[in-house]
Image (cartoon, rainbow, N blue to C red):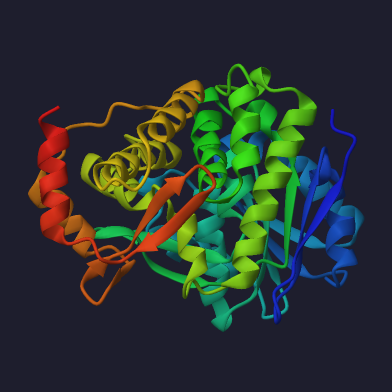
Length: 370
């Protein structure tokens, strides 16, 4: 399907790695692992979910075997509702059962939830072992698999338990998108749109020129490869500049603060992560407009692009007291203030730490009355 192979270096000082974008890459993963120094006979635990393992695990395992790498497959349930410490315990149990050692490897084969959990299990097994990301959703390809954020949800908030643990390799096989449900494809497109807003107005314009972004069939091969490659380059550049999210990297959370509120209040699984982020972008756009920080024409362009991707643009009525409670438990709170990523114009955002809870309450009362 795709003839190009792109290698993008995430050039971190201590833990550099490649993001390899190709078609059919799963069939060559064994070679890729040997190329980055994984030794023959290394024990590997593959973590996947039923929907992904069925079409793709056999080819992956065959490639590992051809490179004399030993693997075992663990099937767990994906979905935000399963992203819990209890599921991590299942991965740890499998690691013990299959004698996963310090020089062993965990491979995450699946979407962002699988990647987050497998990565966190790798970060915490024997105080940290290597892992590889093989993302199979658009959202995971352009966002979740890159940057080393791993973790699980707590009943009081999303991703409150986690660790930074960079992968040894990210292998993106674009062919896996052929089995991705349309709703999941749309959800991933939310993160692509996010990149356009936070730092690439040309990417945003390219997306505007495509007639529909709802499913894989709406986008030709060249466009898709370009979209994914541009998104990966933006994410990689930001991660290299700010690996541990001390400053600049926070802009990757554009739309996520209100998005996490929606996920938390309405139940993980009710809204897909990308859908919640899309609504978060709509909401923060409205707040920025109210503060006279960007123009109504920019708000409309963002809204139209989100709608073109088949993503929700109508947000549910929000219980203000519950919203404030969730915001106060957000991991991005610093000195009692929530960090919001505020748009100024398409391609430019900034980190705002001076929005009071009173201002948020007034804003929420206003939008609830619309």
